[in-house]
Image (tube, rainbow, N blue to C red; front, side, top):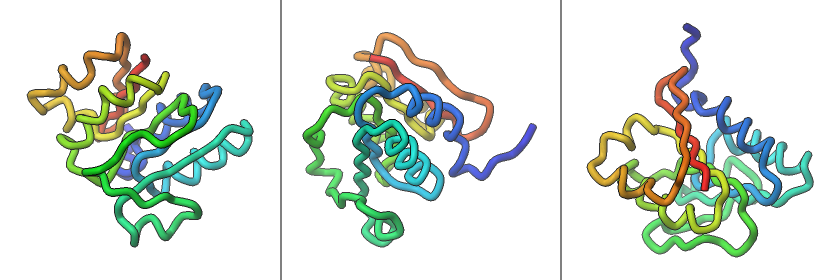
Length: 147
């Protein structure tokens, strides 16, 4: 099996979800693989793209990343059809955003699913999503949730 860089293992399910998004795409966290790809897909579809991150040094590598404090985060205004959840927080803190994301996003793609699934409150966090898929082709795994 092809071994991908661990920071690129989410690309296949992420691109699939982004291509199917009909409204805006919101990225929580930024990266060399996801941010340019999501920005280009959004531009080609003519839909909004917003990337939010907390690491200023990392975010400065990309145009237009909005700096946020994850401890005070709330959903940004807009119509966000698809969300990529890969913020700089610890996975146990990141997954606690899932119930809020289920209130407005049709699709949520989450990187590091294998780590997230190990947390005792994981099932509680995903309860609002009636369907999910797990992509296990590469580690870390990626999950896609459908509202």
